[in-house]
Length: 262
Picture 1 (cartoon, helix red, strand yellow):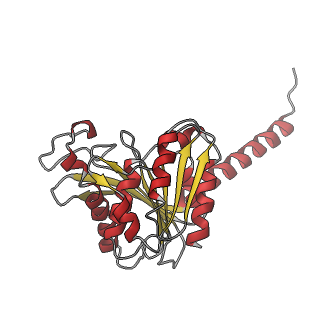
Picture 2 (cartoon, rainbow, N blue to C red):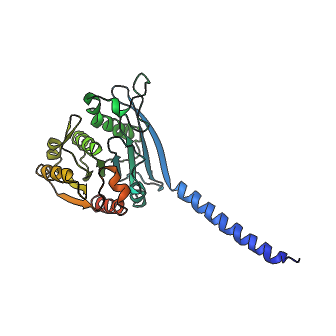
Picture 3 (tube, one colour):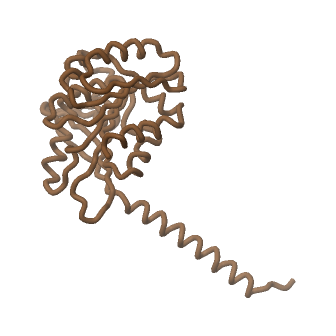
């Protein structure tokens, strides 16, 4: 049997070239963002975890930021393609594990604490926890600005917590996206804070057939001082699962945010 070594060599060179191009592209993609795993102690010593990801742009000091706050019982890894959609638009993304969820499970005594075991007094600390993380970013990044031009995306209790936290932050977010909005949960009451955010527009997303969220949204709209829009997803799910089951929703949310942060 006779082999054509010249052709084989050319074939190997072509394969190697494509492999190097693929590796270089992967390395460039990985290097295009800075990702920081944050560990912040809450006022009561509870250890809070979050991830801050932002574009690597030489000389850039100010970033438009989107804060992601998950549903009850989920964590910051459940956002489907939304973080990638937001990063591709050049935004910084702060994904927080709420107390008792994901990696935010150790109290001041280093005892593991699940959200299932929290009392209402523990849930009431969610807005304060969010502010602790945001303020730590502001303090530890004196040369970078993340929250002068920002937005929030939250699902059920995450949305409620984000709204209350935003009410206490000196700079209002430009918009807040509420997935499966709620009026009150675990002692977190939303309407008053919505009324205070008079420069913030709201987008409320409910799943098809989720009549409870639609009724809640209609009620909350009465407190909004700026624009308030209802949107019904094709997904029949609620909370974070809406994003999992509606492939186009992440893009739609990112486009909504683009209208405000740009």
